[in-house]
Image (cartoon, rainbow, N blue to C red; front, side, top):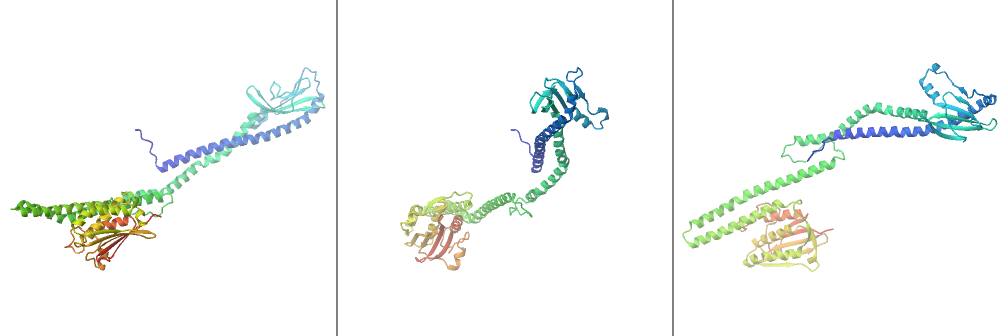
Length: 464
């Protein structure tokens, strides 16, 4: 694949402005020339007619004294002597102006020395054009009723063209003379305008690869603000992603050390067992340890993925989702001889919110698992869905021993477990729930349940 020409913004602007300037001056020259030709045409036509009337008055008496049957006609007037002219322009204009006088019988009586041998116009008063030997003439004709003759005064069109070109050149030259100065000023202006971009480049080049803080410039032009904002958003996302990965690594290293050691211990005990009873007991403990490690890894991986950029959001109806999760956990709750119930009025059963079905399912599973973990046998777990004006409330209550109110603020801390000796989890459930609630712009509230244990309330905003 062929690579295109890579121009810097500075070079692009200079080339673009220079091209535009050349085109601009060319357009000015063309338009000036056309306008000059138009104005000159009107001015010279008026002057040509005026000169014709003057010549008519001057030459009328000469015509009356001419013997029109003479063999020495026409009478030629040469005008100025070319050698006495100090200006070449005067000589040029003299050769380009001519006149002729014909009688009624089309006989040439008087002519100027610059006039061609061909008659300049026919017997028609007013303006006309004629081409003679490649040169175009503008002619004004007059008829004298008293002496019965035609006067044709002609002017070469090249005079008008020469004058229009001179006017156009005089219009163009000042612009061309100032062009280098204009380009120099443009270069300085462009460099000054691109200075914030150079500052941004310098800021990025000097940054440490681990520095993902926001970019701040001394002066940010309006056009560059979207770029700087986009970079800052990108740095923020990268920082969050790296932080999640570091947190995942730290959490895994911290929490997996103990359960893996326990798994290894139970495996060694099973290998060293001398009877089937001890071996079966070690294998059962080994299975519990493996399940705990598996659940821990699942929670850690889910925590690392809770990000607005990676989780799709769609319309979710909570009531059928709660029924689905309750059905999945029913067997484990029945094994503990616990009772699980849900309350929700008919109007709320169809209320939808905007959220992630995947994350809300994890939230429900963790809340119910957590409640079941701290609820004794034959205890009660209640799930309620309430519909308020601005949000839906999802409440999970249990009949366990509950949590002291002063500890509500640390329940979402990672690896914190109330009554460490009771729970068998890793202390990540409520931390994961809190992350999912934040993802949905909701609110997580802890309080004492009417059942005697802990009540966890999740408020999720309804769509506008």
